[in-house]
Length: 202
Image (tube, one colour):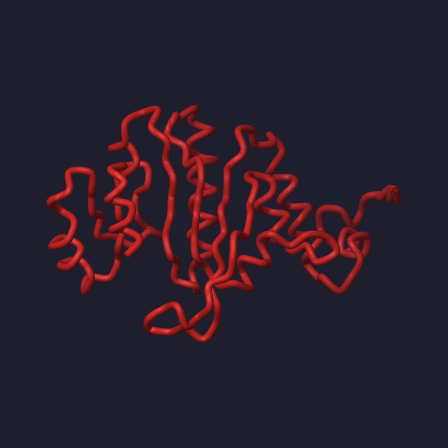
């Protein structure tokens, strides 16, 4: 359904699908459309550089989909890393926006604010602005999953902090043991444990 809507807009649509049982129907329905391109691959192992090099430089790249709930975080992380690699290589083909249906609880985790902020919400904010648009009741899907879905939109920022690796390390340490204070986690970490920590409270 989503592919059909995208194809009808006239924009170029690259569909990456792993399920071989769906391929014949995708070919039958869409390959007559000159703006449709099918890649029979696992998104997590597909060569994104090779596939996206087929898109003309300067064209806006947006990634959309109803993701398998069990690997949605890995897919989002893969696209974040793809953009980082492109920026490091001064490559013009960057993903501008991601719009996904994922598990509703995970969607809420991506947009969580303090004091309920999560590792995911802090992680994604380094690279992008994220919004949860709405929830999708499980009954709207076939076959019906056990949990509700959630629609999120992730808009990549123009600039990425040059020290994002160190920021990520700090965030990981901070959420290492969520029930402990940040100071305690820092003291227990290999990186910061031996250093004198100055804590500033606003």
